[in-house]
Length: 358
Ligand code: KG4
Ligand code: ZN
Image (cartoon, rainbow, N blue to C red; front, top):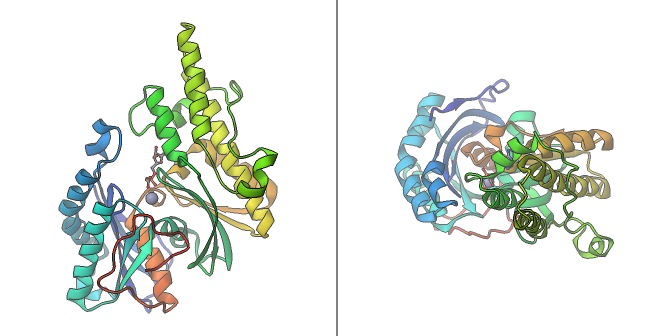
């Protein structure tokens, strides 16, 4: 896959050059960022190698990272026209993610930091999904609300001064993308099902079937107003499909997809904008692979505008896993003079979202 040259504002040549490495799942991402300017973003993906298993196989992902690492670093350096010796700091995903893949990335980052004598920063993948937007839409205001939605996460974060994070809510069971992939499997769609459901949903009637909206009942308001739950919805879709099949009736795939996608988008947007209102935050960033979902994008655009909230969603290539998000967060951490990580830094598959830097 070719590296993607960035279209960014004028370079800030005085800021440190940060190399970012991302390997938490199935994408090997390497990027170079100076200040908030992206110089290059190179990505290699092993997603095709997992498709026949219907999910990510960590051992296959780890081996693919190992094979892709050196060529992807070289492609990034070539693309930016810089030498390894020009790099001022190395940022790497320390977690959350898959232990094997994270270990490959952190090992490469440690080797580079040691060989170059440059500081190493082990940073949080989920926070990177939000902060990457600074490369696209400029510096964050003092307080930003971030919704990070992917195959592994559905999290609502309050982000202050770019690098201080409070977790406001998260999913109690499946992530939004995971729910789409599971419903995709039960509808007989290829893995990952998310984009297929999105496509089908555009042809269906979102009001055809009233599926449940998890954790939106009055009784959930006290403890889980800003948390999500999608497993009950997934079960409701399965029951609905089974009942139809038992009755020998055809399944109207576009209507099922549209009604399911509408339920997910409704809950994600309602809770996120409720959080903006509750905290008095006027800027919302949506990131993570699931932010590619058109039902979520459309409804969030409509509801954010109605609420007077500025909505920032990076282009899709920055929403799926990539190195730019890690370089962007690394650059923000370096700019604030936060202390580097130790060279014996470990990976943390369940790294808390409040921990931005190890
Ligand atoms: O962030 P990401 O690339 O990888 C993870 O860290 O999980 O997100 C991938 C997830 C998958 O669950 C995929 O099905 C979902 O995002 N996804 C979508 C769409 N594009 C990707 N789900 C619904 N609609 C889409 N257009
Ligand atoms: Zn991710």
